[in-house]
Image (cartoon, one colour):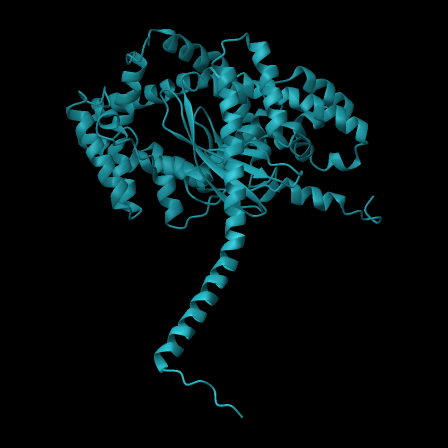
Length: 211
Length: 259
């Protein structure tokens, strides 16, 4: 039986050290992989909001007539937000029983209503800026944080919730100083639906005029 | 000599803290505890009319008066002066909460604006010294001490609140150093200035208030929701994280036994 080549203790330790280092490197690469995955998505979430805000400010500063602005806000909303999920969530349990065609008509009316309702506030944003400050994973989605600097007001925290569950990165909620748009629209749509005794078609008609 | 508030305060506290506690329910994604809803709704109807007929027209007239090119208008001066007088009370509250840092910041803010800012009319502390107001009140102090939020209340003229915040408002009047240092007429003047400052804020946020109060299908529910979400955020008492995808997944589970 051949004796193994003599090794000095120093080479042994060197080798071991290399092995350990390699192992560490591998382990840390493995442990970093999901982290990098998250970071990449967080970056994507962040850039989605950056891009959407850029387009919104372009419209705000365009000086076009308000009615035209509202339609452009609606287009931006449809491009960057997960409108079907927002509309469905705002409608609540009634969405479950609704037939697909009525739900689609409601969703269409809802996006116009959002474009007008939030678009009407554009004057408050003239001469303002919103800085995206970060993004972090939250539950099954991402929270993109930003600060809004509006004239004559203390800076406001604005948080955007972004998900890729629709197959694309889209935001589905905006939280301004704790005030949650999805919760607020749930209350509003529920009240409108109650006023129509649960008639989705009538609610859809009301939404076309509301906002 | 009787202080203007010494009679009102114990009476108001008794009214606020009386009443039952009921089970909160989840509504529109947040916890709502509103056992006094019918009474609150009556007060809301009054407040809405009051806002429409009295506050909004005055606010509109005030905010229309001047304010060109960043020059502070009369409204800004009143808002500044009133807000400045609220700072000593905020210092006391921060100390009661065991938070020395905001207490120190508001103390220096008060010192700078009262002297360099000409009695608080201007805000050099905020614009030049990086000392914006750190907002707090006794409602927050109670929250820090572990007092539960209690039921939702809509107060006449003052608007949305909770049992804890309403009690806080009353105590804030009692512990405010401004009222203890001034004689009676000056205390009333300070009170008037602070009320005018609040009205100025209403003018500043006019569009926002109008859209919630006048354009909502159920402005009572909308205001309650907004107040509770904002207040809990302010007090770091948990945000509302709605996951509509999780909800949708739950929606997709078909239960043949559920009609």
